[in-house]
Amino acid sequence: MANLRIGADILSSKSLSSNVGLASVGYQINGKGFLISPEKRNKWIDDDPNVSSLLKLWMNGMGLQRQRAPMFAIDLWPHTEEEAKKNFPIIYQHLLDYVWPDRSENARRAVRERWWLFEECRSTFRPAIKQIDKVIVTTLTSANRVFSMLDTNTVCDSTTVMFALDETHFLSVLTCRIHGVWFEANAASLGGFVGNIRYNKTRCFDPFPFPDLTDPQKKTLRALGEELDAHRKRQQAAHPKLTLTNMYNVLEKLRAGEAIEGKDKEIYDQGLIGILRDLHDQIDAAVADAYGWPVDLSDEEILMRLVDLNKERAAEEASGHIRWLRPDYQNPTGAKVEKGKTTDMDLGVVAKVEKAAWPKGLPDQIAAVREALVEMGEASPEQIARRFARARTTAVQPLLESLAALGQADKTDDGKYAA
Image (tube, rainbow, N blue to C red; front, side, top):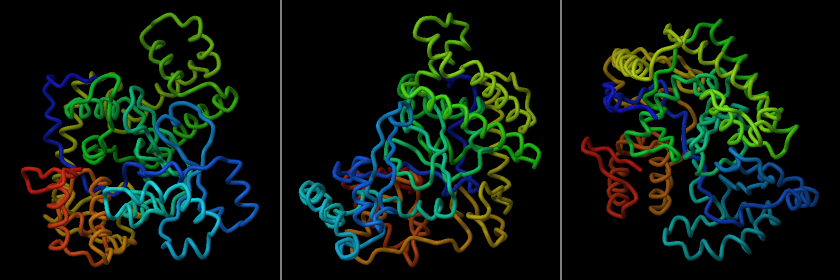
């Protein structure tokens, strides 16, 4: 764990518009009836092929770290209840039997009234993953911080964090030591501790200044990310009981110079941990080179440089220059940002990308605001309003105040709200 007394003022770092809208906590399902076995999925598809697109592989944080028998989730978003009943009667009947009884008694009105949908569908995050095939996923809380590539249509639950980044050079950057030092320091500042490190995207991702990669650097990091992803998946496929947790525990022992024997030696051999270590070493060196930094910097030096770089990027954004991580999504028209319009994530996604519709009924509006706040971590009423088509700040403000009164949000000193 990084030492917070070393002098880097990480709490002064600001969220960057370049990163906005690209990370979210996973879907909050609320209902075991949404999960079905592979056998039931196959039977339903045999009976009605139209349901196949609604039955998606389900993954939670534990499943990322440890291989488990696959389960599938029923994802009816954005269908109405009438559409579900008319077009997917097999699914509707199942949810009526196994989800409705519990959801009908839920204290939140919106959860009761939208009982056939996940409690938090992440409707404002879905546009970010709509046109990509892969996402990067990590566990929300874990002692081993591992980032994995998954298919976009995987239902990653609320014990995970999803990143709408499909290029493996991003996997390399998130996996590298530099980002690891950053997120551990921020996790500690939020009360985290070794053995229970929470990846809070508001502090760990939104302010993180990614390296501004040249094309050759992207090519190198992309190849390394692909090789890392393929290596882990290949070894786990060959050894079904091999888990990422075990692989990275042995990797840490190897780096610490501990003896690798007994069960650890079996894991070392099955996971080819020597190769895994070499891949991580190559990634660390390539990312350090992309920043233009020495690879052997201390944790203190890394944090100091990242804080300084965050300040530089925030100043750039205030002058109208944003180094978008996904310009095709965040700013597809190449719109220029007016000087002084990009402070502390106020900009949001500038282009006319698909926005979620602002719900008509009050219960659905409260649910939508709460979901957007959970995705963003911290936001002002204006920032929440920008996530929806035709939503007004004056309508969002009282809903945030209600959530705060109910203990479902906290109001910060600067007038924002935190989930």
